[in-house]
Image (cartoon, rainbow, N blue to C red):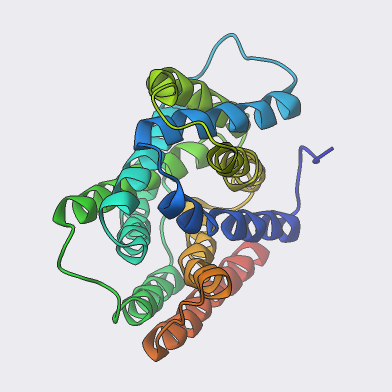
Length: 281
């Protein structure tokens, strides 16, 4: 069973594993021919089972922060699923990862977590890297999809801050609540979609691993890692997404993308090292 308390190194490892699992969403969501609300509900069904097994109970009451985190999580998932069906996967995930900008503001306003100079430097490096990474892939089309992806960055930031606010509580309960809301919101639409083995296999994988296990690890790690640093580590997700596409579909990232990946990794390392030193001091 996963331990309730983690040291910093294990928490970072959990976040890295979560980012790897999150990064597999693009291929499945692009090939899955279900509408967004149905995907949300089906994925939430399997994901809720993961959290029920872990928690072994359904909480009778939820706190204000748990409601904020759950609603933000549902909105983030629905906006991203819709955006990736309307615009390119690169556009959707890059625009969603504007979240650290909003986390800097929300984290300071709501949690009083003041960003350090190293955080600001890391932010500049990461966004420079993401700009390079997707510089040869961004397109002017899909305006609505791009807009939804930007909004998903705001809701992702609010979810991260709300999860971090529960560092002395039970963030896993927030994701269980989010899954229950997701099933309630889109359950009807599941029955309107084509039920094939391939579709349900994709939904099961997305629910159990890409969302369930990933967010369970995230809910444990966020109790140890500050909100901004958690999101910076999570930027491994947009780096790995095109890698899976290349390995499975044969699409080769351009030279700017490869260079951008190295730059983003450098930004994550800068932030992690700086935060570790700050805690030691």
